[in-house]
Length: 124
Image (cartoon, rainbow, N blue to C red; front, side):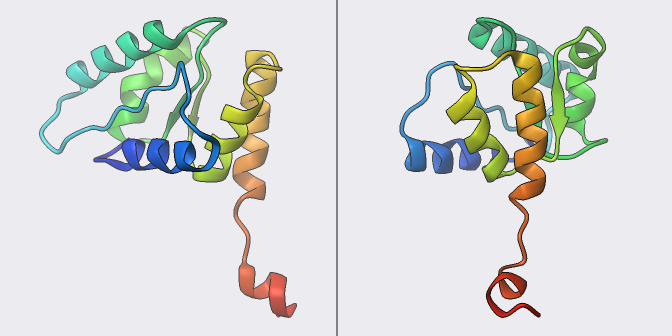
């Protein structure tokens, strides 16, 4: 992600569901270049890969997405728009499903995790 968002999401997820193995967070500094970031993402993917890896990035078109695009072209799932509900669902279900199923779960959880609480509570 840009900045420290990846670390913050990892910390929040582990606060809720406990420490996780095979889960790395990579944040991009303001002066980092795409080549360095790409290398970090490749190394992290190799480090966590058991039955494949799922890459979650913050913003479509941003540097983290661009640095991950070569992996996406090679077939590694890369999802843009990471949020905490998505991340939690992925972490909880990742041991019991295929990588393809996990990708679909991540997309669905991201959509369902955006809720207008005011509408929910007041109906308005």
